[in-house]
Image 1 (cartoon, rainbow, N blue to C red):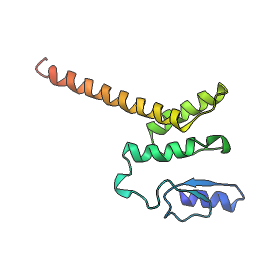
Image 2: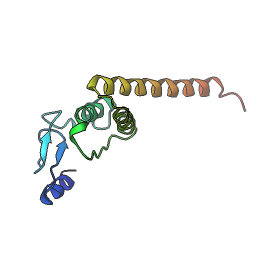
Image 3: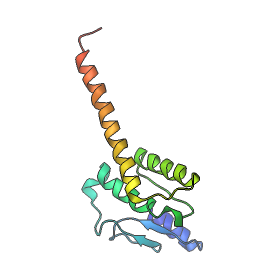
Length: 123
């Protein structure tokens, strides 16, 4: 991502990169973590912290490129819908929606697993 950010800076764009504090870039760096939590990349909580950090100030950006997968997609859709309706989006709202999505997904997957286990003898 730093290569993309640096290329955009070289072209004269104002770019903010949300990454760990030990990242190297010519863009403005917003760090959630001082050092990259490499062993936790891909785990929802750590990805959520980056997404919330960015989306809580989304009004000041023209474009957001997010790589957190479905979580980022859901939060981005929330951001767009609330902005279209003229509402301000607080970090608490983003966190609440993310947690509801996570819990809902876990509940759904658990229910599917339970159903599969209960009916594994059926053919």
